Image (cartoon, rainbow, N blue to C red; front, side):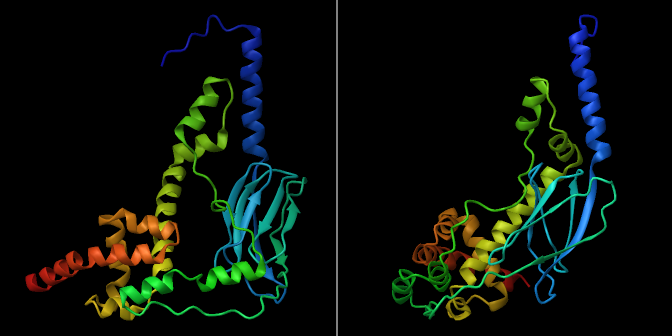
Length: 271
């Protein structure tokens, strides 16, 4: 791409200067704020969503309750976790931010008596009838009145179009450009795909006894592998998972079982 500088006027130079000042302030005012998140008993809290309300940047606390997030002076950091009250903190303007210690307080809930729904047994006709009932998780959600989340609270990966279009209009998404150039956006997308896959596999395993698979001839250590195989060769199975339709999932897996078992048999014969 060739740029012509000879026709750039004073107004254009002012815009460029303003952009350079903005970039300078952005890079040199930002800092990494770290901290630990605990509950009221002092136990570490993992998977807490940490949101920079000024930039919409998000991260999560790890198994030790630790987190790190980029922020500028006076940015508001918000800490969110289901069943806990929200907490906010401000980034200090003096340039020095000691490690934060954030305490989340559980929200008391009276869920009453919860009826446990039996898991499928391996009889497809019986299991389909069981699947038509509300599962345990849904009963709890209805009992406590939890609002259903819209999407997942995680940082959205930068997209090429979203970064290039503002540049053409004379603005610059610095964070988005950095995420694309550094490969962070690509890594995020790959990680999210993996996380979603594992979540969908666990959704099935939490609702179907291992005996359902082992009776059909699938070794217990290969159950997750078989479920993933079903997702790949018959995408409708995963669509049923997303729709929380267990009977549809069972019907779909019944169709993929013979082919998978034949593949296992061939692998054993080759050894």
